[in-house]
Image (cartoon, rainbow, N blue to C red; front, side, top):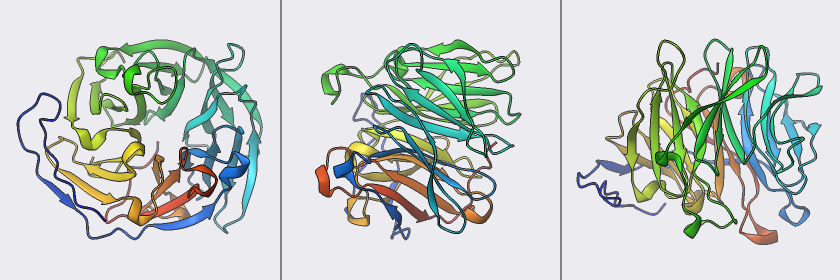
Length: 319
């Protein structure tokens, strides 16, 4: 694992952030996919039964690995040339998945039941990218990357509202590998706030939720080049933030206050454009952090698939 010198100041800040490089977290491959067949996995989520779900972004397949290790196609989506992306699960083990299809008839959030039944939940235009759910299981929060926004979806009605939009969440078209900016990306619910990663203006942002459910004034947790390419995020029971940094092939842990950064794994551990992370539940192991290896720019020999890292603390229960 390569060492990193992390300076909080790369983006107009001056204080030095204490940092460390972990002495390995035991990253292993769970199963591999074939990039030559367009099998580039993006989103990952785990339900309470220990099923691990993986979205294959361009093909629209939602894969399920059960607790016995069997991998099947749980549902199939028409991506219309777009991508099947981030996910979350609810208390009933339904999966909610973001489809960035660029097709007004299909783009937004979809629900897949434990039995594999698929239904449309909410329309979100642009590039809906990642999803988290509140602790009550009543609302989804969905990032929209092009506009730098977060949408709030009421599950009882399917109503989607633009909940928060700000320059803090806007990406940078000048560095984007696609013809639009990728700003707001990974998202996690943290009790009385949501945390959002900006991929191309590398920062983690905390958005408080007021008593009426509205977004309060946002604050930057950390703004640093180590987050350049920050994609999916997950939280542990202490509120530390685990970030898949795709552009740099990193798995990074950031304290909830942003005053400490630890590099847990990198390309030497098998990371290949990692895009999303999710802690296990039930038989999947609460200290297991599952990582989708997107491998998007590595060609037909890329290390696409599902990895798992052994973490020293359990993840925050979802929801």
